[in-house]
Image (cartoon, rainbow, N blue to C red; front, side, top):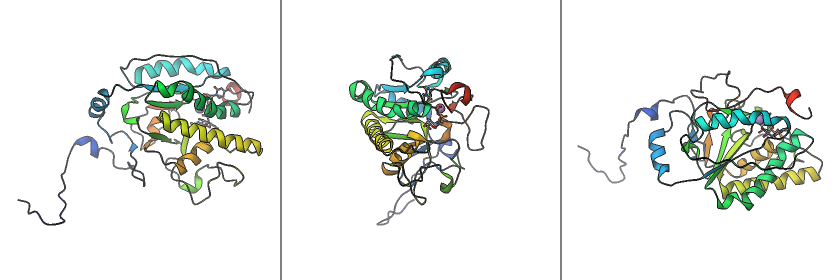
Length: 274
Ligand SMILES: CC(=O)N[C@H]1[C@@H](OP(=O)(O)OP(=O)(O)OC[C@H]2O[C@@H](n3ccc(=O)[nH]c3=O)[C@H](O)[C@@H]2O)O[C@H](CO)[C@H](O)[C@@H]1O
Ligand SMILES: [Mn+2]
């Protein structure tokens, strides 16, 4: 039997298949936040834990101009894969639009900040803010919930840090120096508690306004500011690129399941400006 020695740690080996499925990807950040990949969680167990909490999850998408064409597939695929089997309701509202797609994309931060303040903070427990030129192909469930959640960008998940497309001009509020940064996060999906996402959107809105006043626009608009925010405010959970993939027809060895993906689009045709 085991002798109990002073200062001796007993290891309990809890062996279960799903823990050992995924071997070639990091499933934890250097600040000890989980990175969610297929095989790092038991969907049935985690469902049963969250079921008892009776949570409400708000999800926002913007569809302005020709991007309304993406709404149908987004919603129909969400019905099938996004928090499967739960009650849903849909609210549509008019928002201000802009002439440049960059302004539409960036303005989401301020619109979200106000929407959370005025309504969602009292109505939901968690929120996800997603791009509309997207579609669900696999399960997205309670394993994604956390205080502050970022998604690793599908183009840069296996790239070295020096290739990350952070804003590199010190004049911008989104500036990240060459030797800093943890991951490159997608602008197309982020989430968390209403309080944390409110702080995120408020901070990004403030920084976007300062940049605008200084006549500088970050290289990837609000995505650059989101990356700066996540550098200074570490996400409590990261989602792997399974949760924001490039295109359904592309593959990578690390991606066992595509859950949510960009839809291929003709940029010149769908956007109001280059
Ligand atoms: C995969 C990913 O991380 N995508 C990001 C990337 O390019 P994307 O090419 O994904 O940007 P995009 O053209 O999808 O625009 C972002 C979003 O703005 C909305 N929209 C845009 C234009 C328009 O005419 N009507 C409209 O409704 C719509 O919700 C769209 O999903 O960089 C953008 C900022 O540079 C955003 O951070 C996107 O989230
Ligand atoms: Mn997009």
